[in-house]
Image (tube, rainbow, N blue to C red; front, side, top):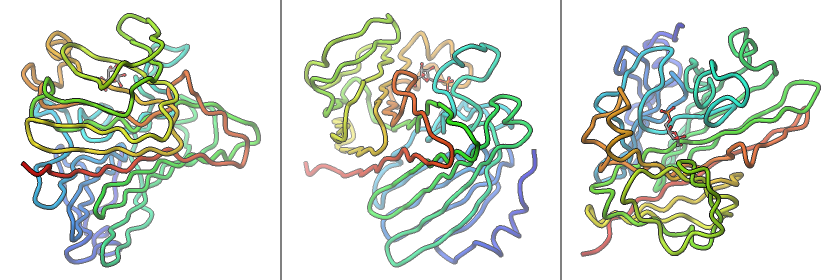
Amino acid sequence: MSFPDLTLLSKRFGAAGRIAFRSGEGGLPVVVLAGPQGACEVALYGGQVLSYRPLGQAPALFVSRKSVFEVGKPVRGGIPVCWPWFGAHPQDKTQPMHGFARLMPWTLLTAEYSAQLTDIKLGLCDNEATRARWPHAFDLTLRVMLDATLRVELTTRNHGKAPFTFSEALHTYLRVRDVSRVTVSGLDGVRFLDTLTGQEHAAQKGAVHIHGETDRIYHDAGANPCTVDDAGLGRQMVITKRGSRSTVVWNPWIEKAHRLADFGDDEYPQMLCVETANTPQAAVTLPAGEEHTLGFSLRAEMKMP
Ligand code: TA6
C-alpha cells in the first residue's frame, strides 16, 4: 500500500498555519488542519480523523495508547469509517469487522480554507481489492470541516448499473474524564437493541448512563442532537446528525477492554463511542447513479462552573 510523498502533498495542498502534513505513527501520512477555533488531524490511512482539539480545551477524541498503526489493521480511536458493512459481514465471517474502508489508503482530493473554516475532502473508489470483497462500483468522499465545530460527512455514490445496499458508521471515540459520570441525553423514548443480549427495548428511559459494558443500537433516533455531559471535565459535547437512522453507544468496560489487544485495560473510563450510523437494521439501498450522505457535527463547550 503506498501513499503520496509528504513533500508533494505539502507543495500541492499545504497552506501556512492552516493545512500541513506530517508522518504520523507507523509512518502513516497525516493531514493537519488548523483554524482560529481549533485543530484536528486526519490520517490518509482509513480516512480516519485521529484528533480534534477545540481551542483552549482538552482533546475531544480518544485514541488508545495501545492502538496499532499498521496497514491492514484498524486504528483504535478517533473516527473510524465503518463501510460498506457495520459489524460483522452478514454472510462471510472471514471478512473484516466494520468493512474495509478503514483499512484502505484514501486520496486527498481538495484542501481549502477561509477566515473561519478549514475544509478537506478525501476520496476512495472501487478497485481490484475492494471488488474482491464487495463487487460494486462506488466512490466515497469523506469531508472534514473545522471551524467552531468539527463536521464530518461521508458521501457514497453508486457508479454501477444496479442498486446496492450498505450499512455504515462514523464510529466516533469521544474522550471523557470519567465515563461513569457521563450522561448522554437526546435518546429518551427511543427504541434500541442491546447487542450484548440481543434484546430489543421499546424505549430508552431518560438519559443514558454507563455503569458496565454497553453496546446499543438506537433506532430512528431522528435528528435530535445527542448531548454528552462530561461532568468530570465540565464539558458538554453536542452531536447533531444527518442521513443517519441509527445511533450506537459503546463502552467495552472491564472484561472486553481486557480482551482487546489494542486497548489498555485501564482506558475504558476515558472514552465513550457515540456513533453516527446506518446499521444493518437501517441499511441504505442506493439506486444506480445516486448518492447518500451520512454526517454529523460535534460542538464541544466547557460549562461555566
Ligand atoms: O460500535 C460498537 C461495536 O460494534 C462494538 O460491538 C465493538 O466491537 C466496537 O464496535 C469495536 O469494533 P472493532 O472492530 O473496532 O474492535
